[in-house]
Image (cartoon, rainbow, N blue to C red; front, side, top):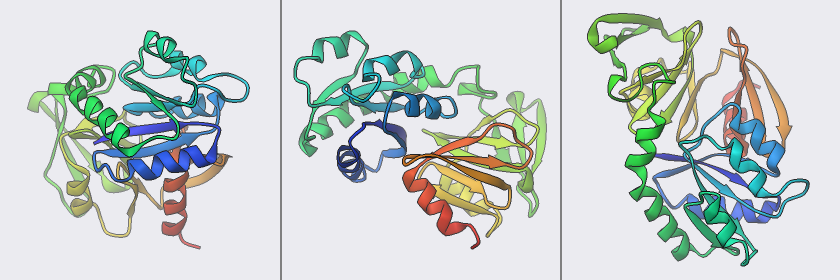
Length: 255
């Protein structure tokens, strides 16, 4: 599964693109932003595979965001401007879509992105994430209270209590697990397998690519119409989530 951030100052344009992307099972929209500053805040906490980016926005234009997009992410410009395609491809864009976005044309873009998936995976699975790539950890030895991670090629193990796991995020064929007192670790286990393993009622899936531990949530902070920061007990850094995930989280949290 590939994750996407949508950046556009027009709510109707974001809603239309998000609606179109819902029909592609391999794409999960993990956030939306209304301007460059909003997108920069999101990218400071999460790394999507794709950024769908408008050009003309208040304050700074979309090209000003390019330097903040993670190196492994692919950029698709979505704009009403017909005259900026050359600039877009010079900036490293994978594709250039004109508004209003046509589903057939979007299908071509998704197919192009899927053809780049091996390259995206190769870049993103870097040593900067503990246990990445061919050295991803294995999750085994599940009990009612904990999961055992086999790390360092099987040379050592790490037993992690479920109550210490604060969130789990899909990263294509892997999942990234954040636990208290540990760096994020890439695990060879799917989101569906985690849902079968995790204690019922302790965790909630707020999007196709994100599971959070509900009792571990310390607070939520609204940042914009399209982004909320979630803060967990035992962690200093917040986790940015988009509008749809925020709505789902509100449904899961006790009143």
